[in-house]
Image 1 (spheres, rainbow, N blue to C red):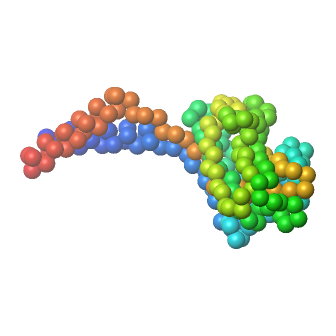
Image 2: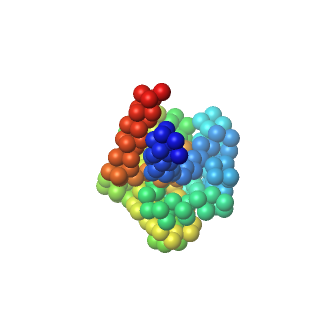
Image 3: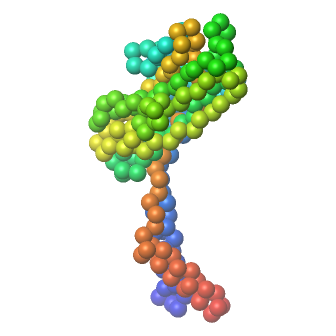
Length: 228
């Protein structure tokens, strides 16, 4: 081993350690071309409830035609993480640092003509379902409602982010389902949008030893450069 080999080896080790800390899985479903996503080799999409894919907004639209409660037992859209992406979901759950995020939106097309007037109330709800926990509805939501508002004629988008633990998905969970639904006055049919469903891991903070190793690698690289 020559004089410059050791510093380069240490630097390489530091880089590899840093990469291992930052490595993370990611299953992002954008629904740009349909209600079935292609992340993780496919295996994720809407397969239950009443919904349609909107080419205008490139998102999945709930298509309920009446007001009232539309979560379990009703027409709310249902997203399932199926095989082979289901395997990636299992890995994320077992690692213990998983998150699930998505966007919910309403706009002028969400409120059907025939009932809505300014000031009418509406809610959007979400419930997670999985093999390890069963049903978990609106986790951590203020007042128990994931989204709650009054119709003001404007467009709105909410970005929601939950840990797998909040969703009830823990180590050993083998299947993953997200149920969406609304609530509104009986004559007010709410057709909201769902987009950008993302299953991902949060990389843990580097341990002090990893930071020290990276610093040592940088220092040794500086020495090599000075010798040259």
